[in-house]
Length: 220
Image (cartoon, rainbow, N blue to C red):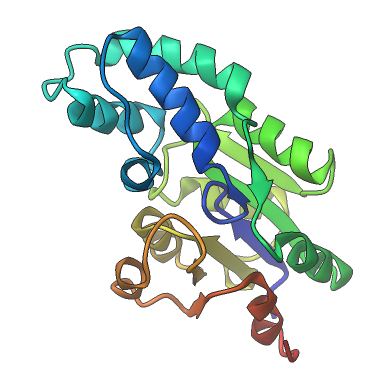
């Protein structure tokens, strides 16, 4: 039986697209470039802020990335101010988390968002101490889809990989779970579509957080 659920953050636990778009567009505007709409941005995020800005710069008029290095500290400055802009949990997330905690399941977050902002975001929405482990992008731990972050969290929480579920909404997340050798859950309410997730044959594919109950043998 599963004793630990590890969640991606953006597009899985929380709808953060407004914060990501607002921050990104403030950076692009400061660099004298055009903006990126939220639908395109959903396909640019998920692999860390450096790759996000590289993709956004290309879209906004800097295909060679000449402004990339200049954009990164600006992004960090703006994101420190606006990482919670209009952020909210997806419908059913709070109830799902309470259900898991009531069963004694450990909860963790593994994100490619900068670590300090990951902690700030999760603790602002769920409260300090609600999650048993929180890990964002940090020095010494490769970004997803490298599985190291999963291994570190499993060790910290003293659970076996066979006891872990990994939840995510992008191909990066599906590859993370596969690379870590854990059962993986694709969520369909996030930033990407069913086709992208199905290509990786996740252990489970769910369209609403309440369906987690079925994975644990209960009726929805």
